Length: 277
Image 1 (tube, rainbow, N blue to C red):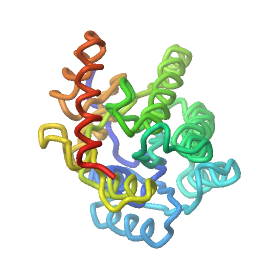
Image 2 (cartoon, helix red, strand yellow):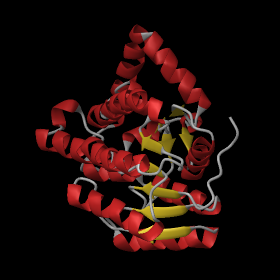
Image 3 (spheres, rainbow, N blue to C red):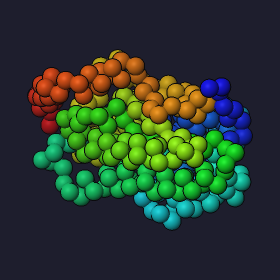
């Protein structure tokens, strides 16, 4: 299909104050889009909005928390008031947690699901209504998932579970709205060089991430690289975006050979224990 024009299209992004969200916002600005930015850190969000404008786009910062339904409703209402409607939505808000299963409390399990999964559901519900109201728009819903949506690495079980849940919902939604011409895309980054691992370590009560230490360069990337792939998907919609081709093949093989995968993950867990805490 021919590439779709993104000029003046309205993109709502959650988790836009840093990392992949901020990089996508800037790339959207460079593509001439109008970005409506959401995040909990108002000052950082305003700084990203300034960079979007400097890149050539328009921007509106709407601070809020995706776990609060009223905040999500306010986000989409602000987008409609400022720009007349919404063409595309990127549900990107989320965080990492790096802990053994037996060290993770139920409070921590529920909290990460509240943001990563239920926050995504609230965003998609509001986003679906918004893009349905724009029959001539891009009509595109995107979710920042992860490469680990397809398996549970040691110490990242809770995080991986939220990503698997996102994938299941997105896959079902994709089928349900296809006849309406609405596209649904999941993004599957590998280890991205952002504050993600630092935040995961802080949430886990330690000063360093063992996953970051043990991730080969082949399976890392920059937020800018992910952002370019997201913009490409907005122009030419696809079901899934895997910014790392080696990772796509590796995770497909992991699914195909579960015994070998179990052996490899057990070795990784043992190595982490030796380095560990």
